[in-house]
Image (cartoon, rainbow, N blue to C red; front, top):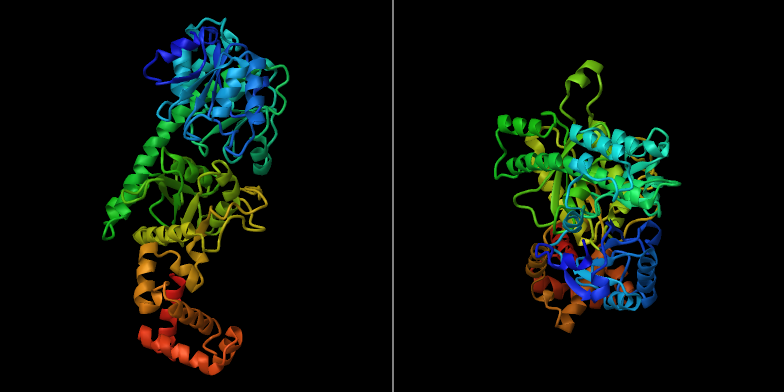
Length: 550
């Protein structure tokens, strides 16, 4: 296949940004997807390079694009296919750099996946590896045949990874999740802490397994020391793992459908009948006895980003089960999970294995998630990731209330005014690592808020929808809500200081540098305009809440 052949495929809808005869007739030997700033060492001559351009930002200088394209040219890349999704288009500086180095550049529209491009080049899936000629591949034919059989048999990722690198002497190798969970490792690879694994994701010896996955659902192949393994061979191993991952995703899609049915049953005007609720819990693999915790996340509004983010976070929990799905009444980019004890299996019953306790579910969940939030947010820094967590629900009949709590806490988190954000100092990671996340809080734009964090009036009010807050403030303050009137603004300032000083005339006068009689006069004006009596505690609270709602 040649570069120009890609432009003839209407299903891909690619656009040629630059390239002429010599560039378009280059033969494509393979495909590599990368977002490294300098991918040269991982490229083979004649490969097509797919990049989502995550490595580039509008503030970067021209030299960064120059270095990237120079690396492609030095490795003999056939062409660059640049995704439009990250920046809404392909930066002109990148097109100019490709023109200088003689590399054809094509844009990939948002609706065309990198997987579709890869499949168009390779034409066949890994399912029939044993029938392919060996010449274009770095993996030996017998290894490809064995991996094909293992994929068909549905083997576990540890075995798949170990057999994939066995002919290399079984070097240490890992498959890592987006937040540093170890999904698989070879027998020669020692345990990696979550922190060390998260750091390994940025190493030059780490490859993305499936470039089409969301940032939160991505898998990564990591070899601390690739040794003599050709980069092309590592990419082929990554493709095998991608095939295994897609099989898992099909099962996960079915699980999410069951979870969404459960959530729809809970999110009804009245509590559902016990029998249907019990069956829905069991369909999700959850015990029909509490306690349960509900968590709702708001993140990317497209694809399955929020679902992947929440699923990845909850996989760090131990001793409990969970079901992740979407609410029929949820916003785009919203995902909800129900966390509880797993349904006991025959093995659990025979061995006496615990399937989760109230302590596992309630006490560790919030600490684990807050510890993890930095790393999770960093997977897609441009999209704020917010979460709300309920208090434990003792029984299935309490789930509707817990869902309401979680959604309220999510609204508070998105307001950006609540406590309970990010890393919890000294909080341990579930499972004993104690290292999930980084040492710093995430961007103030990203928050996880539990109902337990809403311990002040200000924090409580943040969970009320903005339009309701605004309406309450306007009606409670009356004419004083008019910001265009300088006199009213002065009265509001006096009211705010008066309430902040617990209704003390003297301290309010001192803070505002006024005579106490002036404070008396202004507060009387406030009472007249609002219809409130500031000698009464309930009226003070009404006006304090109205000020906080502004």
